[in-house]
Image 1 (cartoon, rainbow, N blue to C red):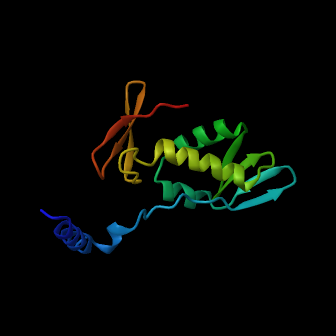
Image 2 (cartoon, one colour; image 1 turned 180 degrees about the horizontal axis):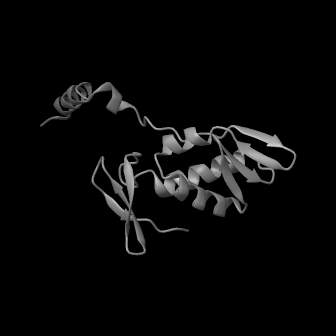
Amino acid sequence: MDINNYDELLDKAYEKIPENARKLSRFEIPKVELRIESRNTFITNFNKIISTLNRDRKHFLGVFLKKAGTMGEVRGQQLFLKGQYKDQVLNKLIENYTKMYVLCRICNKPDTQIQREGKKLYLKCTACGAREEIKEK
């Protein structure tokens, strides 16, 4: 097979890929929307973040508050945090959570589920079928 024929075949194959599969990712890590009152911070789009990540609220809160090093609670549609926080810091925490508990390490898609077996947590990807143990850092 000569190299010119290979390039033609490659171009034809690329044209057959659906448009939505060509995009690098359909998933975007959500960014926080903050409201600061006195010495407290409110994440006003908390429910949107949870639904985008498709994770259990209790699990997310446990990890998020521990990493933030503060106390907090859900009040209606928003998350109350004790202390003042910059959006860059909170966005970085959400990004780290997403990489650890949401995105598949093999195909980088968010179509995953957390499975518990004994004391170990596994991230099971429904897109590519990968299953990998979650090792907290």
